[in-house]
Image 1 (cartoon, rainbow, N blue to C red):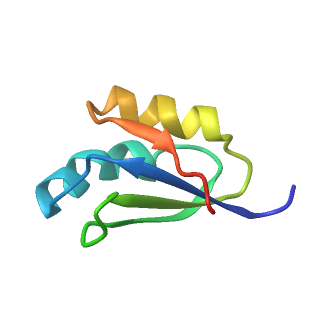
Image 2: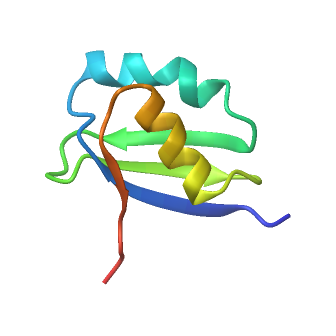
Length: 74
C-alpha cells in the first residue's frame, strides 16, 4: 500500500478544535501523520495515509463534530 497525502477543507480553526479531533485521528487505522493548518483560510487538514481512505477520514472528522470536505488541488 502506497503512502499518500490527503487534504481536506475543515472548520477545525483553533488549538481546542485540534485537541478535540486528536484522539479520533490518533486512533484511526491507516494514518501515520496528520496536521491542521489553522492559519489557512480553509483550515486545511493534511493526512498522510498508510491505508485509510478519503471517505474514512471524512467519517472520522464528522464523528468528532466538525465539517469536512475533500480539498481539490488546482
